[in-house]
Image 1 (tube, rainbow, N blue to C red):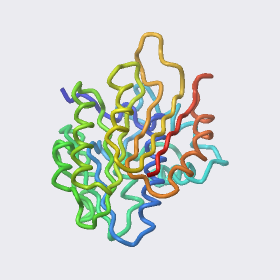
Image 2: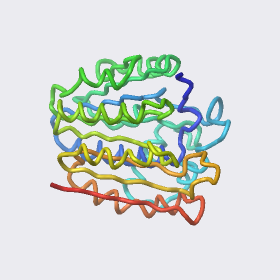
Image 3: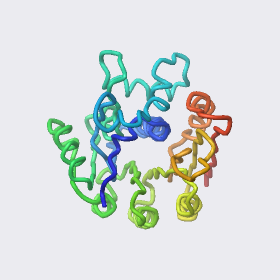
Amino acid sequence: MLSYRHGFHAGMHADVLKHVVLVLLIRHLTKKEKPLWVIDTHAGAGVYSLERGFAIKNAEHATGIGRLWSQKRLPAPVADYLAQVRAVNPDGELRNYPGSPQIAFQLLRPQDRLRLFELHGNEAKLLHEHFASAGRAVAVVAGDGFAGLKALLPPPSRRGLVLIDPSYELSNDYKAVRVAIRDALERFATGTFVVWYPQLPQRDAEALPDALQRLAAGDWLHVSLRVRAPAADGFGLHGSGLFVFNPPWNLEKDVRAMMPALVAALAQDEHADYSLAFRQT
């Protein structure tokens, strides 16, 4: 049931979009002194080798982070994201890729907290080992992030960023995302919630953004990046998107300014493009 390992896809175009926006969000939210809690419901292993193991099978990072690695003139948010990747590659060679937990850990301040869930047994073990020396700032739970999220909302500081990005390998994941967001907004209406989703020629994937929009009572931002036309056989990820509930002030401006550069860098054919929708109440 839980065969998915993110190492197969580490550093691909979907990670680039997700992590550029994650860096932007944390930068915005840590401008205020009050402690921030970052909660990752599907955290993965923390850091992934790009030179061995799962990542070398399809080398998907080559058309993701690999295309940005040597570029010099990038929009500030993309350059900031690239700096976070460089932090786990101190010799200057692209050997490792940081997952969302590691990126968040690098950006958080002493007063902030990181709470991580991972259901896959082997991934959870690696995540525990990776953050073994992090102290009280980081807590790792080997369990279901959908279920565990309830106990953490609202966080003590009443300031929180929640990332929900399941593999969508399980047929129930799309419904579970909708249920989790509905419950989370009831518990913590002012929290910032980010849902990642794949662009696939499947009904559930195509319907999810509209379903999330219907759940949003306040401000929201929806950005997606398509790197190529959908495959004729219906297989493979041709893009991905992020739906952000309660985005911080000016996030929309920053995201809109950087998206053309991401399209240009990550395009695999002439159908590459992005979309961005925003509502401010």
